[in-house]
Image 1 (spheres, rainbow, N blue to C red):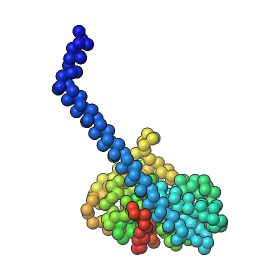
Image 2 (spheres, rainbow, N blue to C red):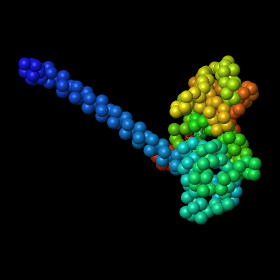
Image 3 (tube, rainbow, N blue to C red):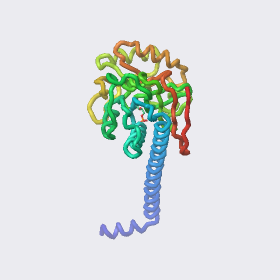
Image 4 (cartoon, rainbow, N blue to C red):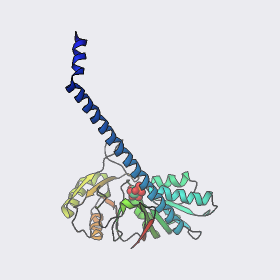
Length: 282
Ligand SMILES: O=C[C@H](O)[C@H](O)[C@H](O)COP(=O)(O)O
């Protein structure tokens, strides 16, 4: 009886239409999801290729047999730079005496993994060239750094370098800060001071500063130096004097360093979507 009812209802045209539409809908949804995933993967591949081209070009132009001490930045772009240095060291027989000074735990291990000479600022405080990535670069070459949690040691190492060279992909190349990077300016702070620091930054410059929370650890991110990180989302479209902002925030007790790098970068190499490299000078 029941099966007879079912058989009849499935044969009704309305049922067949609904079934057909549902199948179409599912198919369209799945196709859209698939296209989104494919486009995202294509973008990721293009961005990574751009990082690689920028990093390799900068290494080949700035790391020569005269370079004795090299600062190594952090992030995903710098991996390509270290790979190129290792290729020249181990395949092409160059740069045997090059000493690499790391700017993070990640950089330290990259240098060791590629069997390069590991240095430190105690023995190598005068760096010839430092190469590092950036989260965003504006038209005056002010940088936002620290998106990956490293900024304090990076700034110290960059400051010890005669030439500080930035390598990045085309998504980091902006006219104004905040145009493409929407996660704010990272600020490394002493853990006990983050609430007063947040309130003071917001009172001074507006926007909102929040503690960066860890993804696979309960609680906040802890930096390589045992501190907390705040991300200050400044007011978009407001004209900030970044040198002034950087000085004012750095003066707040408990602030260890900001991810604003003002007047530090010497040249910036952007890998572009078309495979070329754009070089920006300060
Ligand atoms: O904290 C991370 C560093 O400042 C990186 O240099 C910056 O986030 C850029 O990283 P990536 O090369 O992965 O874009």
